[in-house]
Structures are given as C-alpha cells and as structure tokens.
Length: 67
Length: 470
Image (cartoon, rainbow over all chains, first blue to last red):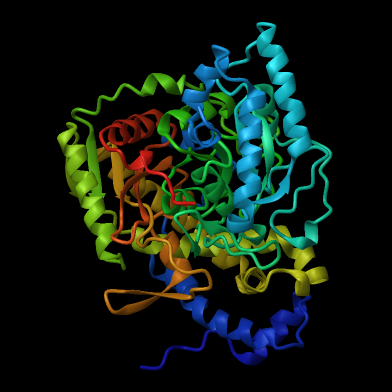
C-alpha cells in the first residue's frame, strides 16, 4: 500500500517561504526528500495513547516528579 | 618516567605525583603539548590550542603547590574542552566557521569550577559542527580521527574530546551529550564517558543544541577520573534554570568495588534493533562478568524504547531549529550542509507535534521509572557498531544496510529523553582491534550506583588499560 503523502510539494514550498527559508537552490530538493523520510516517524507518535499525559517540561525538576 | 608515560597517567595517578611533588605541573603540561604537536596532524582533535596560557597556568600551579596551597586532585591536571563551552577571552566556535571569531566575555559555570579546582586548559577541542551529528565529521575544521585507526570516525559530537583523551593529548575532557555525544566517542575511542542526570551539571555557558536533552559530561580514561571531575563540577547553579538543587554526594565514596546483589536488567528490546555480532558477543561477556561480580542479571521489557527515537528526534529538531532560527534564516548557506538540512527540517515540525512529543516523553519517562523499580540498573551496548570509515552514510549489519546516524544513537538517546544517568566503559575489542563500550544507566540522581558498578566492572578487566597505536 502506498504511504500517505504527509507533505505535498506545494505545502513544502509555502511553509519554507513562510519560515523565511531561501526557497531557491538545489538543497531544497534534498530538504524535501529528507522531510518525506522523517515525517512518518514524527507522525508515528499519534499511535500512542496520550490520554491524561501532560507534556514534560524541563523546567520542572526530575526530583519533584520522582516524589 | 618518559613523556609518553606522563601523558597516559590517569588524573588519579597524576594528582598523587603532583601533590607529592614527584612531578611538576610544568613537566606534565610540557609533555602534553609536545604530544599534541606530534599527533595533531594525524588526529585533528583541537580547534584552538592554548600553549601559552597552559604554560602560564602550569607555572602558577607549580608555585601554589610549592607554597603549600594545593587545591585538590585536579590541581595541575591538563584538560580539554569541547569547543562549545564558553571561555572568557578565548574563542568558542561550536565547531562552525560562522563562529570562528566569537569570543565570549564569561566562562561557563563548569569552566569556572574547573579553573577554580586548578585544572589546566590545554585547548578547545574539535567537534561535529553545532554538535548536530554523532560521527565527529567536520569539513570546516577538518574531521576528527580515531586514534585506534585514523581512517575511522572518532564518534561525535564530542569527537575531538574522545580522540584527544584516548591518545594522551590531555588527561581529561569535558564533552556534551544530546543524543549520545559524550558516550559515543568514548565508546568508539575506548574511554569512559559519563552523562549524569539532567540538572546535575550546569548547562550555563554551553552552546545549546536542544535545551531539554543537552547534558554536559566528562570523558576520561578511568571511572575514578570521572569521579574526580564530577566532585569538582557537580551541583546546583542558579544561572541554569534546569539545574536541580539536590545535595551532591562525594562520588569517590561510591567506588567500593561491591556490587553483590545489585539488580541489573537487560532490555530485550535492545536486541530487536540492528547490532553487530561482535558488539553483541562482547556485551554478553560483560554481562556475564557483572554476574560473576555478584550482580543479579535479568531480562526486562521496555516497550516504549522503540518509540524513544521518534520522540527524541521530534523534540531535538524543534528545539535546535528554535535556538538557531535566526542563524538559519540569515546565514543558512554557511551552515555545515548536513546540519543545515536537519535545522531547516525543524521548521516543518508543528507546535502540536512538539507538544505531543513532550506528552509522549512523559509516558516514556514513567515507563522508564517503572522498569527501574524492578532493577537498579539497565545494561546494554553503548553503540551497536565499532568505528567505521569517515564519510560512511550506511553501515552493513547482518547483510542489511542501516543509516549510520540513527544507528549510532539507538542505545544512547533514550537516556537523553528521560534524563537518567548513563555511563560507558570499555568492555572489549573487535577482531580488528576497535573498542566496544558497555552502557550502564540508573535512576535519576543515583549516579553513585552507576559509577560504583562501572568501576567494579572496569577493575575486573584490563580493557581500559589498552593504548591506541598512534
């Protein structure tokens, strides 16, 4: 089964532009290929049941979390 | 004693000789500077050498010791710093030519403490650009080379610290570890590398990669040396908002050699990912040795281990891009291309993805604690392969090609995500003479158990006594 395209080329270019990246040059093609490779890993976190989980923040000490 | 012998003394050995005035800090520093001059063309471990400052500091140390003002075990000991520790008046490049002329106007907290303890800074060490990579490759300042075979990577990102310490160019080094950058070069160069609990060592004055996963850590040739440096630098720092105000023990008291009854767990998930057969073989031999020393070894299950890379990656990429966002926009074309790629990719991770990853991190943290309620320590290989050729993108393991970067960090990153203390100690060599590391990790702020076990294991073997051929 074909993998869902998580980032179309048009969206890629729009986000790149909005982020202030230089959208011209050969490295953009490399970036697009790289993103298509890593985004499924990021989206795989959706498989986890995060009910009742609050985000970790490094500004709360680990010691407090342990107690 | 000859110059090479001096360069291969551990800090624990050197400090006794210095304190008893059997050797002068000047002699020690001269020996190291001579060795650096001879090995730098091969290993490229340093970005900035501080010959004059080091000699001046050695003279000062000599004077103080002669006058009876001995400061402690680091007094007169030559050390190196990964070039992302801010040093007052000395350039700090973070491994990137963009910062070639950046001179901080203050010392990082760790540098201040090391200087206060009498440590002598020999130079700023080479590193993967912006610490964003685990191989120790750097086209801008030149690649770092492994002293066991200079054609191979030293590991990264603290590659210069690893190659310099392993080759006797300095006695101790300080690296930093966001996904394994202290432990990976230490394992690949045959050293001890320690990442204490998140919050135990101050990050103040270190260039960040990902705030919530960055850990400073020592790279040494023995566990005892690791303890010496920890005793000098550990502790609360109000300048670091993530520093934790908990009492710091005297770590030297942990080195009892006694691990009888200690429960050591080996996660079964570690063997569901690619691992070289020789690394696996040496790891199980090390586990057997821990059992012979009295530890109770068992298999444990840590299912979320398999999600840890995705969680850590999402957080690291978001934080790294946030930290460097201005640089990427204004100077993107000057950033080391592989680092630039990853930094630019961070713009495509949404705030929701980041928060979800932080929620997943809580889940991972809770599960890690549950596993460490059943056992006192987790044991595993530090890196699943030995050092490979510089410029390698993929590594062949059991007839399958695997991406080099995720492979290098697969065992180290989980402990950047949960912040637990983890150490690597040498546990053998491959058939072609390359070092292999054993990783031991413990519960938060229980560094003593980790250090005690690593020390007991180290003293039951002679792997740490082998010297590279350079």
